[in-house]
Length: 224
Image (tube, rainbow, N blue to C red):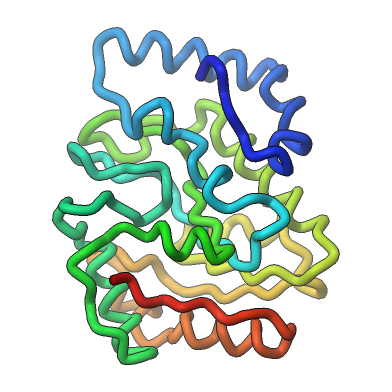
C-alpha cells in the first residue's frame, strides 16, 4: 500500500485514515501475508473503486463484502471482473435480475467499469482477500476504513442511493441517514441467497426511478 494514489476528493477526506494505527497495522499484515500467500486484487487495484468513481460523482453505492477470491477475478470493483474472465455465479445472478427488471440481456463481459464511470461506487467492505479464502481479511481494519467512506458519503447534502445486498451489507444501515438518503435492500445475489429476496427486487429500475425524482441522469445499466 505504498505510494497510494487516490482521487483528490476521496484523498482529502480519507487522508488521516492512512496515518491511523489500524491502517498501519493493516499495512504490516498485508506485507507479511504477501510473503507466502497470493492476495487479491493487485496492489494497484486495491483502492480502484474510489478512483473510478470520484467522491463528487457518487450517485449510487453498491456495497459488497470482499473481493472475488478466485484467480484473475478481483479487479478492485465490487462484483466486477475483467474482460475475458468467466462470469462468477454471483454476477450471473445480478445479470439475471437485470434482465428480469429492465429486459437487458446478459452480457458476456463482467467488466462493470461503465457503471462506476456513471457514478455507481462499487465498494467492497473489505478490500483484499487471500486466494480461495473468502473473508480471510475480515476484522483486519478494512471495515473501519470503508465504514469511514460510507460516513463521508452520508454527510453529502445531495441524496445518494445505497444498494445493500445481503446481511453483511445491510449491517451498514446504521451509518446512513435514511431521512436524507435512499436505501434499497435485499438478500445477496450469491447462488446461496439470491432466491430469498434479491430476485424480483428490481433494484436497477428503482435506482433510476429515484434518480429521475432527484432530477439526475439515470444509469445506463447495459454492459456491452
